[in-house]
Length: 199
Image (cartoon, rainbow, N blue to C red; front, side):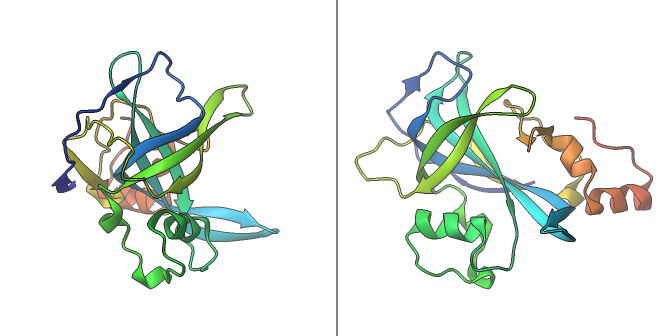
């Protein structure tokens, strides 16, 4: 697990009364990058292998147990200059053009943003908080109080996932299931004779 710089302290703390992050704008810090591996994705009738990553933002608003809300959003690591990931970073970091080769996601860790959150309903009827937009945080906005001591990165080749105080999911699927179904995890399991990660 790669560790990086600590988040600056803040004297501002918000207390929420719901497990569901409210709609609206929230200051947040990008704290965790999770390698989801390569998955087969169908687009316009064509199935292609696509590498994916999960970005996890820590929000200042607190849940009933005192831990902060965390917003997790999966992105495809696409080569297209019009990809969701590059468009999000361009708006957030206020850069007009971001060639894929110049984007190092790890360098974004620890940076603050203002997230725009809406609510959506899954196919199973579950209401969840959805990240609509990440924008630059105004200087007058409060810095979220940190629960993570340090930002970190997880890569599939590292093996078992660390334990989180929240339950990340990818398109409604538990995070471990998504990683276990990736090409990289299946290849490592065949090579090492390891069972799926059930953490």
